[in-house]
Image: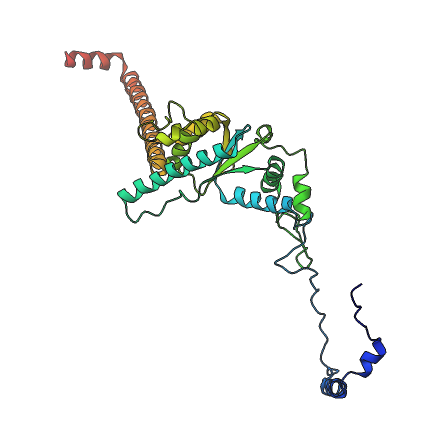
Length: 330
């Protein structure tokens, strides 16, 4: 057996403490007692503010914050709040090698969009190829995070509870109660089932959305790259993975779009600038049609009143004056 370490009794350890340490401690205590000023009797004693039990940077969570589910919940909330455009895909038994090929082709296509922008404007700022990523999500946790983002209002129900410790973060008990309300329904509830993957965009850019759709969900409106232009895209592993990937819909600025609506957003000519031009053209057309409608109504009212005036004048002149007027006219 290994030798045991002898442990001295507590009394012996106290006796072996250096005497100058004890004298220094007693002197410090006496000095602090002697120099502590007392409150004057005339000065009112203010009540101290309530002591917070938790630091502001680490508020308590409804569930343990160190577990992986809580971390994913926080991550998905941040993703939903910071991404105005999110595509939702369903995947079925896609292998790791197939995922690698799909992600490689997606990043390559997005970088080409950045390169085209830099050719047009070397000082272009809206380059998002490195910020758009395809990631697999835990469906149940993602649905719970979306319910928190949709139905939890941190300012609701606070009232006069400013002095109390009221926690308003996404993992608090109030957020959990808001997300647990099953009477509140989301438009994406029918789609949040099964294995899912999402692509989050930092901005609503039809140009990048068009590129993503042409790679992951090609159609006649968004054709896939040809074999001569991009032979790696037609690799059997990439094509096998794309066949198991299905586009379900999109969430654009908090609104749910189906497959056709998603393709409509991606098909806007000129991107955001083109959409603004279409909006200006629509407003101008509406203004012109409104002006024409008002002008035609005023013209018709004028002719009606003028005809009525002439009719009344003829009746006031009488039949003889009317006949004389007709003779002069002849």
